[in-house]
Image 1 (tube, helix red, strand yellow):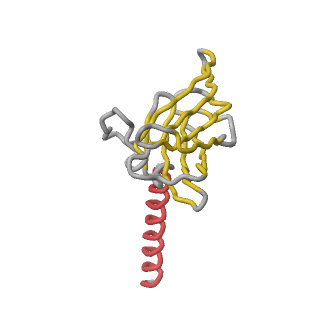
Image 2: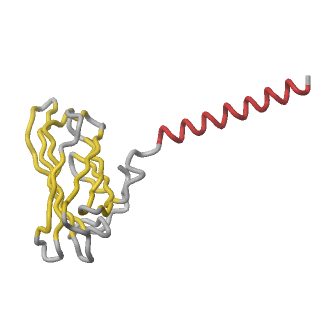
Length: 163
């Protein structure tokens, strides 16, 4: 009988621990593995940089936080020097599209023949078509950040980094 009670108690502990792990996994942000986060009106961005033999790789996520649906999204990322001269750029089309409200897509670009240097900047230009109950529109979102810190130029660092 003692063995049965111990087995039941052990089973209860295992189930409780499993429930905690499931709850924690469900609340983990998809952007948790990305170093940089930027909030825009319609979109949230999260990205990281990875040096590659062929150039500089930018891997990221874009989340639709406002429109019912986003379509025809094009993500263009350029590496700039400290004087804002374009050193290279690449474009990605996050798939699958469309992107519904509160959903996200990954993107990856390889800016060939360049490497990040001190003072380098990244410029993001994202074109998309949005639709909502009030109608549809096309929009361009763009921002420039310090490549090393991810900080948007001319804007004080935000403490609100929730994605």
